[in-house]
Length: 185
Image 1 (cartoon, helix red, strand yellow):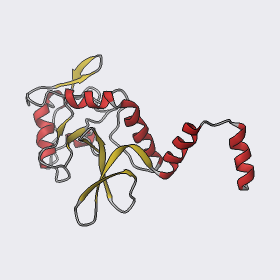
Image 2 (cartoon, rainbow, N blue to C red):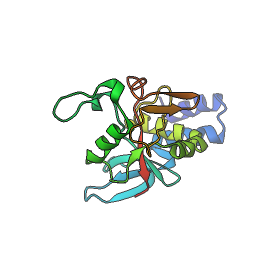
Image 3 (cartoon, rainbow, N blue to C red):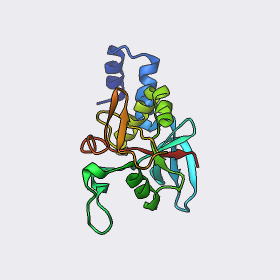
């Protein structure tokens, strides 16, 4: 298809400037929220465009990094192959896993209520950023129902909170991952 034919098709849809800008941003990998990357030397940098030559770390929302790796159902297994019992999964278990995972800084933690509030206030930009990343083959942790939050001050807690209630931590782990975040590094 020639460019003038393509332009005629676009013209027929009467796109607004915002529609065209959103399409170009998606196509070019420009996101409304800042992205965190690590270069080959281990240096962390931030920008609003996808960098295919660096390791993607996560999305930055108001000074908080929401990591591209969350706690999944598969992470329920300990290093020695013994699985945690679902009914026993606690905030402390997941926090220990986060601290032992070399991919996270020592300040990383499960999403807290305050972190979820930050996401809520920036939800439109966050969802747009996640969609642009997905368009470019970059996945974030799953969230079909919710991005849950946890009471990280109480490691014995077995509760995952969401907008209209709470459940045992293992209940939605088959469909959703537990997100991990930290202050911007």
